[in-house]
Length: 445
Image (cartoon, rainbow, N blue to C red):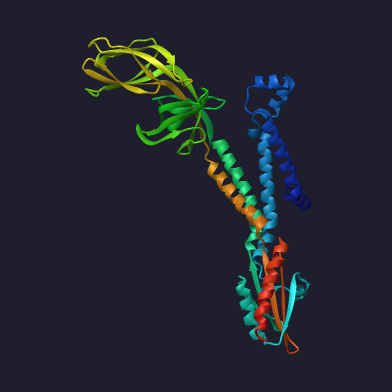
């Protein structure tokens, strides 16, 4: 039974298993990139044929990243990383906290790089200069008496041995964040007309209504065009309302979303209703009214006895920019119709009264809304991964021993050291250290 447990443990702690799972995840990710995700079944039948489309459905290829087998691969990789860490971390931690002053002295002459110095100075004076040489190069030493001599030890970066385990932890944190976002977050959309507000969006695929817990208001939508008439930018002026009061506002465009309480609102599309928003102000009484009108229909402002409407349209010199012919009367005599460009405002006189007339095309803004409570875990995991990779690849654990002992009226100094990686860089550092110690010791002659 013990052998069976050991074999199972060894299987999950295997590096080969990690490489195999990573290979499968890479292949699956390529498939998920090549084959469109979350498309209707008819689209797969049309592009790949009925039999292949049916196979896709069986294997959950259309929603691969949420499929049971893809999630199982992620869980298996996470389990592998956890067991690998449990298996190897105690040994690595022992190296980090090891008392290197208890190193077997017989090992020192076998280390490489190594340098020996002989001086006629006393061991006590020599030790003073060795300490100074170590300090000059940033090596903080500890010491103890061993076998009639003095052993000094210094090290840099023992904690860098933990870099790979920081990477392991970062991957697990990223997985946890992705799972949290997948099971506790959602993605949805809403087509929100200008001047309207809503507290509900509709989930992708299922169209299930989701209550936001607050209201989002589209104050204004603006569409601009390139000189050739193609849409250039669509911008939405949004506001967040809590209990009817505005708590946040922002003008959003593509790739510049609004975020509030874990929700992110992205500008994704728009829709024209072939209607117009008209703001009409009586400049004498300061009465103001907002109208949603259609071309060719008579509109009445009862409070001011005003009647108006759109009777014609012309293209301006700018493509996709139109002028509209407006008639407006307030009973004080018929006035001449006037032309106004979409998005502009102008002052109109009728008898002794002046009105400010502003008009723009009426749009709905298409918003994509996401809530991902796991995103900060993903950000944390990515940060940990960068730090861990930097430590694992660019930093090393460097150790130096100096043994001073008097033999035959001479003081012998043995300097040796090692590094767990990047040995060429350590050799340069070791040469600089030995040169510093040699120079200090020579001052005693």
